[in-house]
Image (tube, rainbow, N blue to C red; front, side, top):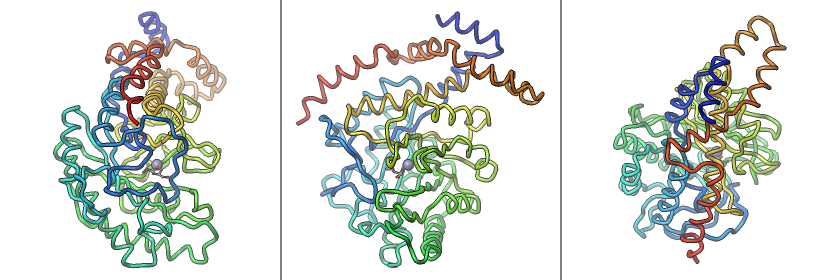
Amino acid sequence: MYNEAKQMYASIGVDVEQALTVLAETPISLHCWQGDDVVGFEEGAGALGSGLAVTGNYPGKARSIDELRQDLEQVLGLLPGNHRLNLHAIYGDFGGQKVDRDAIEPEHFQSWIDWCKSQSIGMDFNPSNFSHPKADDGLTLSSPDAGTRDFWIEHCKRSRRIAAEMGKQLGSPAVTNVWIPDGMKDLPADRQSFRQRLSDSLDAIFAEGLDPAHNIDAVECKLFGIGSESFVVGSHEFYMGYAQKHQTALCLDAGHFHPTEGIADKISSVLMYVPELLLHVSRGVRWDSDHVVLFDDQTQAIMQELVRCDALPRTHIGLDFFDASINRIAAWTIGTRAAQKSLLLALLEPRQALREAELSGDYTTRLALLEQAKALPWSAVWAEFCQRNGAPGELELLGKVKDYEKSVLSKRA
Ligand code: RNT
Ligand code: ZN
């Protein structure tokens, strides 16, 4: 089937082997937080808060670093290609000690770095400006209280240094993504002063020059959240401007815009003015921004744009979803594979023919080619990719997930 598919694609000018090479070389950064419902390993960790909410109580979630690593190894084995780990600061290896956010050190993450080394994968990192008494009023870097701001500035500064250490040791830069929950449930009286304080706090955080070979800074916007329905300080316009002015990477989360607004169309514009892009591939459903990613129109459109704009070399693809109502290994794996399948489909487009049709004004041909592409045997190419990379094909995946559930997850109380 693969050989037939390859010939069929060759007849419309698509080099399938080339597509598979790009697919293999494009890592997806696996978000650690799908494995334990965004709880982390801080001593005395409290409830998830700051507008983040996980629903569901499917049994078998990881309760320790060892269990999370065991689950991640399982997930990595179910994915074709080489990926990365995206860690939040609350997932440090604190050895049973209470280490507050403004006291985290690279040593608390050394065992993760070692684990990633053993898996031959890179790492990305995130300060955790949520689920903490100093974030209970929904304000961190933009808080009117200087002590609160300083606390979170210190946390973010340390996070950057930790990320740089990860990047240095692993030989691949870590993307440090700053997302904060700051906002308001009801109408603010003075939006400007919150945004000014956020801008000043970010300046303080990014003041220390770090080697871009080790650390890449990104900032993530949001339109609204639970408890910040009327106002989010770090809006799209805010961070677009900030990232442009300071030449940081911009993070676009697919679930952070109006319900019918996709991020695909933004990519070509953003990359004209900011050096790099971080994606949080996610799926918004009504008020939730974090459903498991699917092989759907939105995800396909995002990947199409990355390929069509030659944006892959300047884009870091991460995931951001958390579902506790289904098997968490399945959620991770299905979501990541959906992103990869979407990328493959994009790589198999008859790009040259599409561009020629468009440039000559032949929109009939353009439309016909796009519809035709959907009917071509891309799934035979995907099956080949899985096989070559030692990952299960679509028909074997569920069985593998269930086996692991039976032998490992079901034994967790
Ligand atoms: C929240 C942001 C943020 C978080 C993670 C846990 O709306 O999307 O990226 O989901 O950092
Ligand atoms: Zn996100």
